Image (cartoon, rainbow, N blue to C red; front, side, top):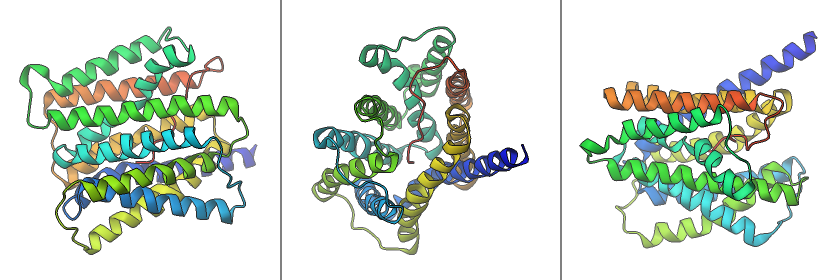
Length: 306
């Protein structure tokens, strides 16, 4: 019993470190845009992140073979261009905290898309999570008083939608290849998806990158901490905790993002935004709590590498 308690304490500590890294990264990414264009930063993050993950595969002697190239390529485009590239674009004009919360609507979109694509119907308390998320987005967008960052907010939501579609495709891939290694499944799409991201970075006009110490540190933070270390912490926690508990803890990341942006970037949400953020966080928490039930068979809100 003591050993079990020790293992779970270590897993919870790993999750706490993980959520602090992912949550604070929203401030890191927003600040890095002072020195590089959004697509330039996204390209560096995804390409070098993929190389680090392949290094992890090699060191841990995990399988490195490529499974289903067309599927992996499409996953890479959705996860790297549709998710990472679009969320970086959203951060150009949008606040880090607000973008974090809107991007983290991805479990909500996954819940919706799983109905037509996987036959996993929404039922019971899940409807409350859906209604809460929709109301939260309406409060944040405030369609009666559209603001200058409305396009940025739309991009943040679209990045979450892209992640949701990739999550459903990932589950379908797992059904076909149940033994596929998780890091392998992350590394190959990241590498394949980074190539069009690099091409976009070259084609889209952007100011000349300023190779400051902060930019180099931000790239390293994303590649090493948010990439390799975060995935190792996530796998460590999943081995010792139920998936629902682990996913519930990961939902703290947007909360940390809002608080960090409030303190460091002085992004103070107004009343409507506060209500909207609270409703979305309630929706995410409810989805995670429902996952802890033994009868739950839906897609877990797997952590996004942000």
